[in-house]
Each structure stands twice: as C-alpha cells, then as structure tokens.
Length: 131
Image (cartoon, rainbow, N blue to C red):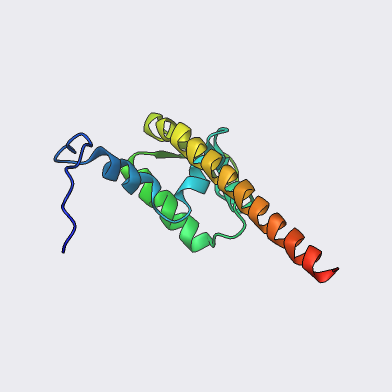
C-alpha cells in the first residue's frame, strides 16, 4: 500500500525562487573562497592566488570574470608602473558575506562533530586492542 502524500506546510515558493538566485551567485567553484578573501578589502590577482593556493590561475581568472559579470566583484586597474589590477566586493558581494560566514560556521560545527565521532571510534578500537 503506497504512503499517503502529506501536505507541504512550507510557505509557497515565489515564481522566481530567491534561494536559487542567491545560490547561483555563490554556488560556483571557488566563489565562496574568493568572497571570503575579498571581504577584508581589495586584493590583487597574485594575492588571491596566494590566499587560495589550490585554485589554478585559469580557474581564478574565469571565476573573477563571472563574478564581475554577476555584479559581485569590481575590477579596478591601478595606474602604476607596472600596471596592476585590484579586485574588491561590490555592495551586492558584501551582502553575501554573512551567508558565507554562516555556511563556514556550520562547516566548523560539522567538522567538530565528525572529529568527535572519529575520536570515539579510535578510543573504542584502542580499548579492544589492549584487552
């Protein structure tokens, strides 16, 4: 006998879902890390590469261009010799910082919980081993 379908008690989602809109901005590869490092102020490309060592130059360039097109990152050419470029968060990008910080806080909680489970498992294994 199939289970009865329950009524969804969540508020009805708007036609253009705001959650999907927001996730399209922060859901790209390396985007949360870029926002994280730009929240402290403008950074040059080489500084971002040093901040996020696992990202390749090609991917970082692509993500910064995408974020610039989406309106979350501003690119400014600094008139210097040699010329340099700085990236910073726009007002829209800065509005995403609390969301990134909240996600990071949940991630820290999950890591701590996982460590606790692994530590308990290790203790049980050690207790059995030394009997």
